[in-house]
Length: 104
Image (tube, rainbow, N blue to C red; front, side, top):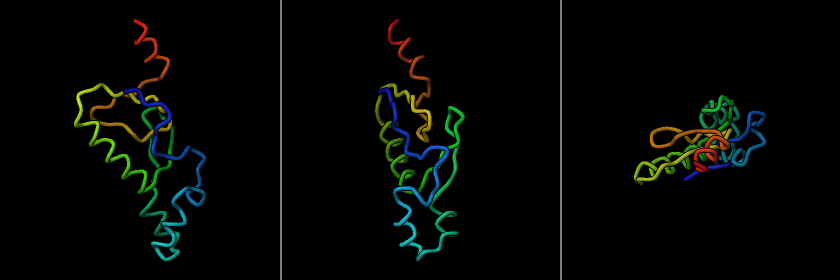
């Protein structure tokens, strides 16, 4: 499996207030912006060295995805530059590198 563009994060210029789930988090936490930023968002570093923003919902998707990958016997390569999907069972590599390998 080769992942391209599947990242479960927002890019390095993202603002939490402009993300998909901001309004839901604000409603859940009674408009307490400080609490939302502390509990529902975090900055992470992708394996490619990019700073990315993720949130609690994307993180749940990530955990479920990683559990699924751990239960299959297939090589998974993530080529998504702004990804938070990495860990056991997932190799990260540049897409061009992977395509060269496949041509061999």
